[in-house]
Length: 84
Image 1: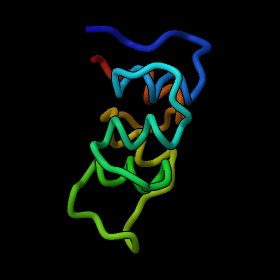
Image 2 (image 1 turned 45 degrees about the vertical axis):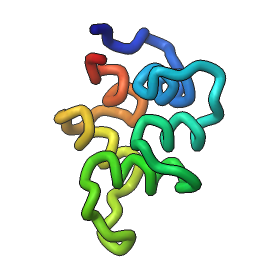
Image 3 (image 1 turned 180 degrees about the horizontal axis):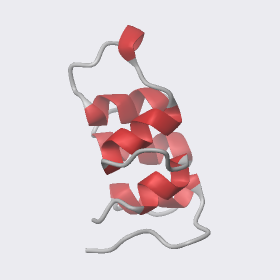
Image 4 (image 1 turned 30 degrees about the vertical axis):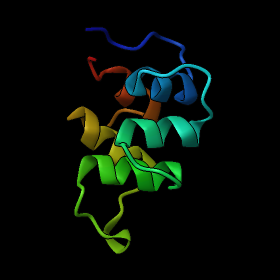
């Protein structure tokens, strides 16, 4: 199990969480969420709550903090704190 690395990009963190390498943000987010064809924000909202409806989607920063069980962190810092 490992945490993300300081200075890593959003794309790198999504790939780390998804267990992939070289995917673009959208592809890595869908791999992490076990979804297909969704945008980054939609995929992460589904990962956080499979029953969440689009009208209730949280913003990218908020959903990343939700996934990481953190508050107040930047999007990438929240994802870095997820141990996989």
